[in-house]
Length: 460
Image (cartoon, rainbow, N blue to C red):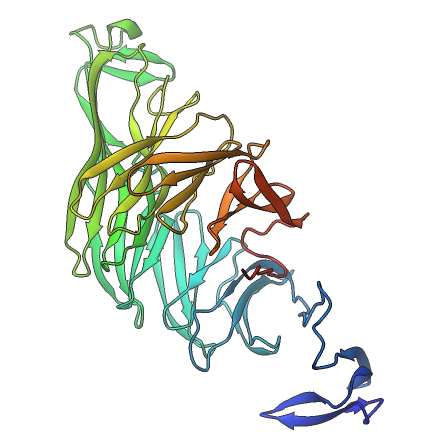
């Protein structure tokens, strides 16, 4: 039962099964709802139509049903929700809730399994949402349509590393085994969830001749051994040409020593380490074929005690706006079995539409967590962050234009603005940066990544 304390200011009536409040004159009204002996009310302010809302006014809000996992906007479409919210109840149930732009919840969908590790990955081109339920050695993708019904689900082995959609309704999913030694790229039909293709990049391998590792020591063996080693892959994206792009390592390692007595110790200085290491870029076509380009290659043979600098993608990969690709590559130093122990050299490579390396833009060295996101701005300007620096660079020619010092290593590119400026997320604020000397905080005390909470849009 619904009631209103002042019918002169507003009225209640039903529309499409919902009770709607229609305003008449400015003021404050109290709406009361009674159900099964329980009563609740809310006071609602009616603002004059010819006056703007005061800055910071909340137009609407929702009551949470549990722990908020993530919110994201739906791809605009007719008869589709505006916002999706993924939430988990204390009992372990996961719900996807759909809201219109007026804050009305239009439906909720409950995931059929219970797991705490869930992600709202992205919206799809059919105005639905993609959810990933993650387990130790596999994960299930759920696609929920804009009407709140499960369109399909698909289980893949390993860990999800990246997802990218084409406008022709093809999903590319990168999966890796938990140890990173096996990588697959699966093409799924966005509408039905059917598998169109599955690609397996050539695995990185290691061959041991006369020697093997035992902890931090080396021991002589009688028979050669070989096996896979970890492959490092970037994220994946779809370019304007409709092809998907991903970069990954292909490493061929060989450890060898002279003939020796099986079981006897081998001095590290007597172990030769042959390394053939490549960063490969795949251009994946809708039919599952691909073009392979070697972005970078390094070959060396030296004692295992000497340091080397193998190349690998850091993760970030985006279109360059010119028909090609920007990919971030790391050259690590002082490594043992591929593990990075000190500050590395990182560069942005631009690969043109024909697969040729146009330039290698060096980035500042840093220590701490990697924040390698890149965004494209206007007039062929790109932005990226490393350490405490935001770097603006010329995308076409690979020239650094300027740096802004955020005075903290925990900064990350958030978005490029239409006015040519860049938004940067810091630990305490969202900062708008236009050049090294001009930066202003537009939101303090809020972590905007993933936009939990309100969204603030600055119009220029």
